[in-house]
Image (spheres, rainbow, N blue to C red):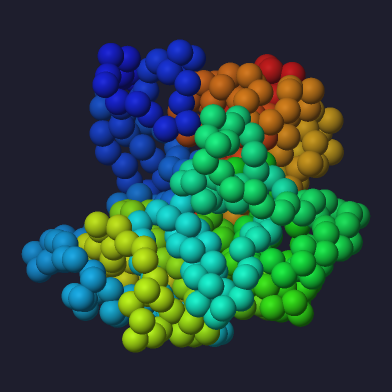
Amino acid sequence: MTLVTQSPVWRPFTQHALQPEAIKIARAEGCWLDADDGSRFLDAISSWWVITHGHRRPEIMRAIRAQTELLDQIIFAGFTHDPAERLARRLVEISPRGLEYVFYSDSGSTSVEVALKMALGFWRNRGETRTRIVTLEHGYHGDTVGTMSAGARSAFNASYEPLLFDVTRIPFPFRGREQESLDALEAACKAKAAAFVVEPLILGAGGMLIYSAATLREMRNICERYGVLFIADEVMTGFGRTGTFFACEQADISPDIACYSKGITGGALPLAVTMCKSEIFEAHYSPDRARAFFHSSSYTANPIACAAALANLEIWEKDEARQSVTRLCQLQEERIAPFKSDERFSNVRRLGTIAALDLRAQGDGYLATIGLDLMRFFNSRGLLLRPLGPTIYILPPYCIKGEELDLVYGAIDEAASRFR
């Protein structure tokens, strides 16, 4: 394979002293990545969780090409365009009830940053002093200043501590300890918090930690009881990952604010939205320009990205897409089940299309050395897997076949014997 070693590129989440090289990919299709020397890699993590139906899905590629012949980019303040208008209406139709307004941005981090600013602006414009944000322990919401503040404090953001604002963190609702988390949330809400931001059902970068829909539902109930805005960070969980289109569906809840990105374009182009209930929009609606919502990015609602998202939603309207999710849930369960009795692993788990398991006695947390060793091993087997320290997770595109998943689980079995 071609390894790029002398490059001016500074890659994300990379310690270049330990990972001086990068694999050069030339082409992708379905679940496969082709390096420029002809070697191939099975994309078992959907290229950082964004690819849903597979790389270069034809319908999405056609929509992108067609839109490039019409409109590439336009300022979105004072102007609009058909792809953004149609996409917004479609998102309102398919999202949990009550989410009636759509604010566009361009990444998961910014969608959550927008949500936090919406929440604080809501209370300020209503004349109420509510500024406290409540979050869930081990959460991750992005790498902008506001989202780092809301996420877990760790090596990820230790250097930026002077920039971060304080939040109230409640314990993660591990099985058997759910009430502890709910009691802590209730106490924070009683103290007139502004908002609670949470990844519904599963924490991604925090270690693929899973909790129940019943707990999520009770979290929503507590927030509603005390008038605290409930923000659902569905950046990773949306668009089928948890087995339903949105994770909140499993708890039968509707958030006050919801954040979507990653799979919104099928993974083809960067786009994000923050959706909110009408009360939040109306709190910013006024003849007073100072009450406006002051947030934007240069590429807000890029027409080409919106066209890709519309094509993605059209795919979801077909039975094939939802059947692919159901099929992948079954394939994952069948393959991960034998590992539940394997003493080399702990906390073997699955939620929807996502499976994860922890390699025993190999350090703890994202910075555990075993993470890099495992990643290199999987690369040598033609697999794109990127463990979170000793936590190995499998989060593939929905088009993956059973025999392709067998390659993944076979390599995990081999890795456990090698690195234990």
